[in-house]
Amino acid sequence: MKMNKHRILISALVFLLSYSIYAQVEPIKIYFTAFSGIATYKMDQLKQLNELVAENLTFDIKKINSFDPGFYLGGLLQTHILSNIEICLRYQYNTTGSRIGQKDYSGCYTFDQIVNGHLLGIEPEIIMDEKEHYRVSFSIMSGALFTTVKTKETIEISGDKKQDSEYMSAFSVPVCLSIKLSVPIIKNWISGSFFPGYLFDTGGKVHLKGNRDAILKVNDEYVKTEWSGLRIAIGLKFNLD
Image 1 (cartoon, rainbow, N blue to C red):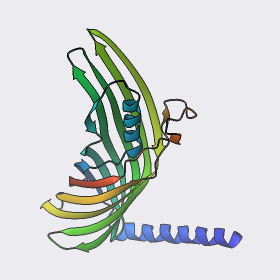
Image 2 (cartoon, one colour; image 1 turned 60 degrees about the vertical axis):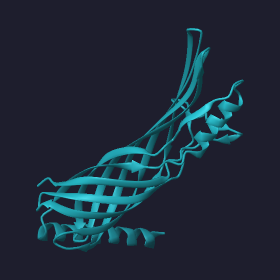
Image 3 (cartoon, rainbow, N blue to C red; image 1 turned 180 degrees about the horizontal axis):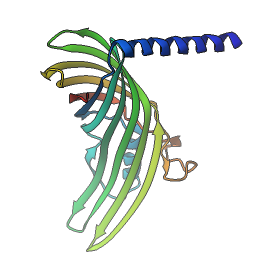
Image 4 (cartoon, rainbow, N blue to C red; image 1 turned 60 degrees about the horizontal axis):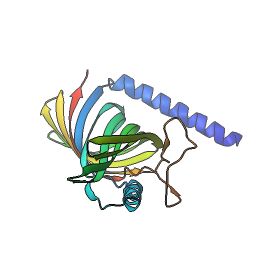
């Protein structure tokens, strides 16, 4: 055990020494990337919640929206730690939702789910090929994903309207793999990026906001977040020096 601690300490010292030497040889540069893209979301268990609600109604309903692909946006703060490796701090905002309902001459019924996710992560990026007119890199991001889920049930009959809402939250750990293609727009100042990827959501149990013990269940199973899906984004990268 002591030997392992010594090895870890020595490795950390070697890394810090190497980074200090690199920082003296190469001036540290800071970059900021603003990006936006489109994503798919699995959300199978929240879809089952819609099915459960529909089964308990005395009338037929229609599926209006079911966690369809949607836009997301975010930002990256980046710096080099080695000549071919960057480290990035990422923030990303995702939103999706669903609606089932029915409307006729006698009234209207809707059941909505609005799901928002705030992602904070660390993203090492390895530069695989870099030329004057392009750069190709690969990144792996992991961090924390904070989710809020709002359900809203509305029924209106003969002008009388009744509405009921619940607020829930969840925490999960995401992992996102991306390939990035960058091309300069204004040399040494602004470049454009295109990065397709896939996000894996480990899944966090959905519980009432402020009460971690009040966990949502569907068919005797805990409901978990499922942000997993494809990601395709474009961005602008700015040199902040």
